Figure (tube, helix red, strand yellow):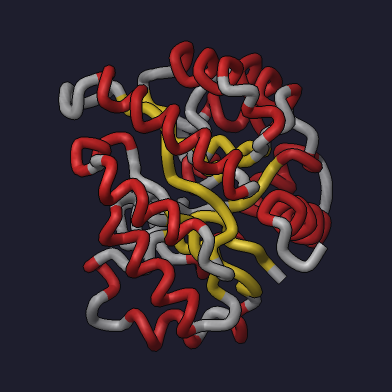
Length: 256
């Protein structure tokens, strides 16, 4: 069964058919889903989905673009959410320098705080990093993230950087971009990184793989991603699904 490590089914894109879509997952080979928080509100929604569906788990965290909402009071609430029995990771957290706001200083402050929160609650991290390669890597090193573990979600940097994260003990999240004609960098990453360090993700509703690029994404499209990885690495589709499931279970500490 496929393990979907990163989706956002709390998004309004699913308001018309969320329950029907999630109810169809297991009959279509999607065995487990982690719904990932990006704000305080979406973290709560992710937990509610995890409570409703046995095969859905949650991650609790505030995306770098939403860190302006954090303060000491609601950070305490976030910590409490991280202790929920179906929360398997702290995320998605990190740095996003594509936009000017929140300030880089604000992002780094709450990235550091959430890294230490993950250490305190003994859960892995889901890292978002956009246009911030060096700062992300240096902060993870400074906070001894190899002791925390986790995944670099929607990986967008070089194969050399991917190998550095693998040496740090991290997994590499591979999604729909690997199927794009202009996804050369990610294809090189998949070629360079051992299958034992790759996990499957969609980032639904975003980044739908070919042939559905530009449409609303869902975990039902993961087979396109797994098939492309199999072709790049010269292994079977079944091996990709099996290995990435084991990787995800180990990373999230589910049933291991």
